[in-house]
Image 1 (tube, rainbow, N blue to C red):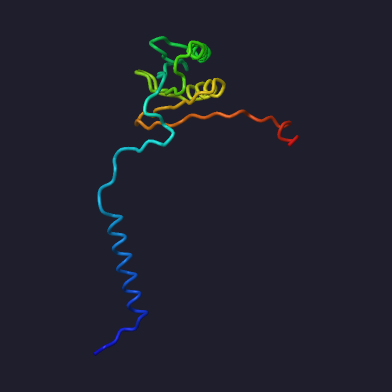
Image 2 (tube, rainbow, N blue to C red):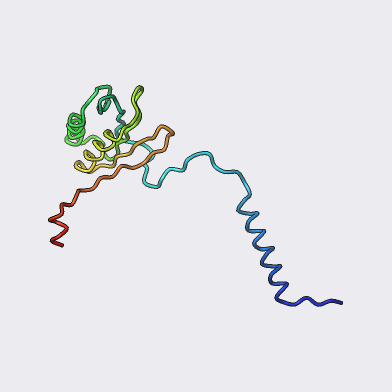
Length: 140
């Protein structure tokens, strides 16, 4: 009868355990849906569409960034929901950086959450922060 050393049996056991773990992780298909981030709400209070010439479509009316800010200010004064705003692609216009920057500035100033939906349906949060001047950074 042949005896096996303990070190060899431990190696074989470790290899078998690794194979079982790999098989368990590899089982099943991959998800095709994009999982939403934890901070994306299930529904949005306001939906805005991107329009040409860096304008926004809000409730069917084309608005500039300043007009949109005024419309949002009115909603806040009237105590209408303004916690989350989503910017989507318009019928004829895609979301441009200018749209995102304008919405981010408005959201920062008025303290609400802004989100953008990409053409593939992915929703991302837009965040802005105040730009520190060189003098303020040198004082600290």
